Image 1 (cartoon, rainbow, N blue to C red):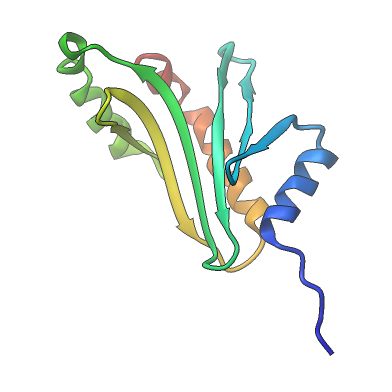
Image 2: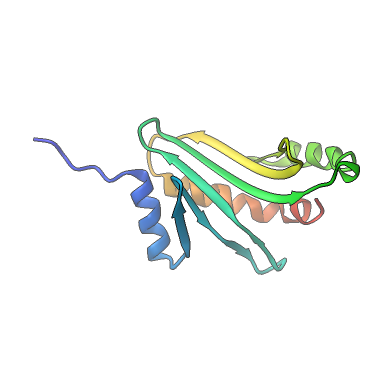
Length: 130
């Protein structure tokens, strides 16, 4: 007899619904808005959940830079990466600064989500000054 097992993706969506968190699903991604009212900042992460491989990824695009301003940002990226517990700041090939967090999970992805998003609150000064 096979047991029905909810995917972590389904559990995260259920968590969003229960907590009245608005989200969108598109191209195998879940997109939402995180509002930090203490700093009047909103971030728009997207999540990729691969239940087959127990892989979870969060990407948050922060800002697009022109080539002249790009040289000024590298020290800020290094400073951020030294203190961030979950996220790594990176620059894409088209000069977009983004934060990325990847992990393999064994159970309860909701706790990983809450901890990683909660860690952003401590990093808001860095994020605001990028």
